[in-house]
Length: 576
View 1 (tube, one colour):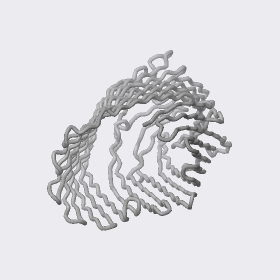
View 2 (cartoon, one colour):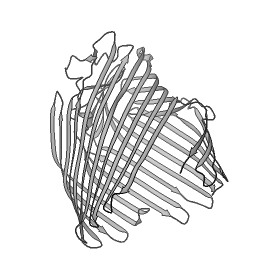
View 3 (cartoon, helix red, strand yellow):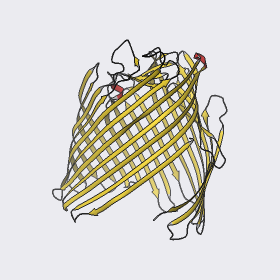
View 4 (cartoon, helix red, strand yellow):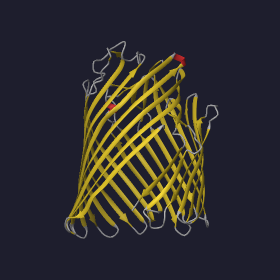
């Protein structure tokens, strides 16, 4: 990061009760961010019959403007009936030009490109909810949600040399440039009605009807390129709709500590996708059972076990068969025959909080099983890549475990936090299917010592290792961070400081550099005064960069991100 400028404004217009039955609230927010970045990177590609490294250097200047306005009202004519209505408008205006130099020695590539993403987005949301108490043992609720989104997404890519020559043909042999203006209109409708019947203090029945519809209308064509194999490869027009409708019920059983919920919903799922080359319709009945068991005094003490069967629709972008240029060496094309995925999700949570010594124990385990793996399908030609998406005929698995423990002994507070993630992945590269396994293990140890209104110090160490295995290949990335944070208070003076030492990189035999960073803030404020005077020091050791590393299915990347120089700030703040 070489530049970061933020502007923020907000107002809370009013919040008042028009009378005893009606209330009204209005507020608005405006935010502007200007961010400049500079990144040097190295991407190592591992393909079945080919390995090569790409060196990149990128500079970007990003401007984001956002504004929102929200109005909410509530109407309660009597204790048995109430209606709440909320409407909001959200506007964004992003723009980001990216200058990139890419070099691949193996193929004698030295490419300079300019990629620009700009546009605007307007989102209108409204939500209506009502609650009606019919008797001491029965009540109902209804809700209606509508969201309208209008987007203009303008993308352009220009280069000083020919790009993707094996997949597309540019209109000009001198001006290597592609422009993609897209206009999207999205609508989301959701309506539901719920009826609750309390049988007795331990039992309750619930019946629900729900309908949700997502509609997309997209228009736009890429100019500057063509493909002789098909005339619509750069026509991005699409009409997409998915509909999810269900009738369901649940039975709840409550005891003093044990709570059981059994739910059953019958869905009718429908999807239609229309493009210039293909029109597809898909409908099916789907039964969704759910079981939820809770045991404990409250949410902070006890365990919860949940099982749910569900279904995910294929997204509109994954079903669009046109070419989407993503870089000088890559493009994406959707799969019009892609289907949705059925999944089974198991979740176990345990919490134990003891107030006497602030002891906290928690554990969460989530297992998600899908009938098929959704993965990349890649066609390559030297360093050029055409990526698509497909379903592999083998089960998908994601297993996530997170746990932690902390306790207070006098003025000391030690803590330990652990996590483990296991994923099954699959991809097809040049029609060769490859199975992958990815594991991530993370641990965090910390020790805090504090004396109220005087001194608070915390020392922590974080270690994360992620590795990916496939036939004949293994990649690994390691992350280590040591940190010290402190706060010193003396009457009207408060000193805060944080120091960290970071070491991260790919485990490829090359030594990973160590980055040390420090910041501080000194603030003076008299008791009961709204004014405070402060001095801040950022990046006091004057580091000019830090390193990150990432693993994907067939790319292992290291990036050097350049930072802002040493900065000292002095200011006066006022707060009520």
